[in-house]
Length: 302
Image 1 (cartoon, rainbow, N blue to C red):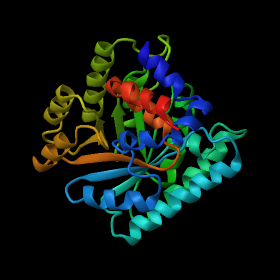
Image 2: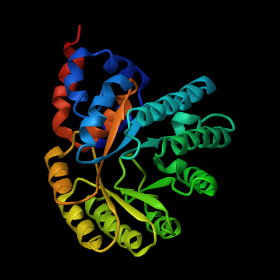
Image 3: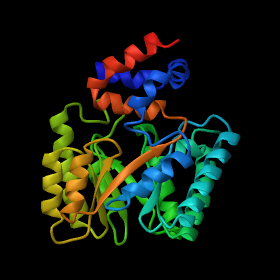
């Protein structure tokens, strides 16, 4: 129930406006978001790449007009230019949400694809790659179609799948071909039982089944989890083949350092930007211990 309420709050424009003006929230948000602009994020990225890999999310989702979609594409192109100029592109890629590029607009599939193509072209020039994030289940088919179209010109484009969804094991089989890059996560959206597993145990069992499919394939499994048991299974399955482990910025940082020191390819998902509210609420839904502080910050702001 709490998770559902938090995820619903994350979709509220009123709460978003209130939260983004709440100065007391910034220290907590800063645990998960590396600043509100690129100048703030770049030093964090440079520190992380001394021992880890990074994927950067320029925050934004559910764009409501073409100007916003164009601004998101321009922002990613600036990010990629800066990564190349700072000599970071060989260890840093970018993650992109298609809803930020206009997927929800009229003719949104075409708009999102055009924007993603422009970002992929910029990534290719910078010498790095792009992973297309997955959002809620209503966008899964359109997102995977866009990934397939992008891979015609940019075969290194990464896809994201969520073990929470009942369809994902089959999607892993379709995606895990030669040279593919597939990030497996549990899923952070409130989905109906008709399309998603309801219990944590079911989601975890699905995660292991999907891992086995990806490791048996010919692509690069990118295993995104903070669960020590699942990390151990991933390391065992990947002991004789290339793979990546991935965790979120601000979550289990000591474990990230330890895994990297042990020789594991560890990639940190690092978001930055002003549109942090939806992302932050999904992190609260995953870590409810922070809810009391969050609510106090909203109530006591001036």
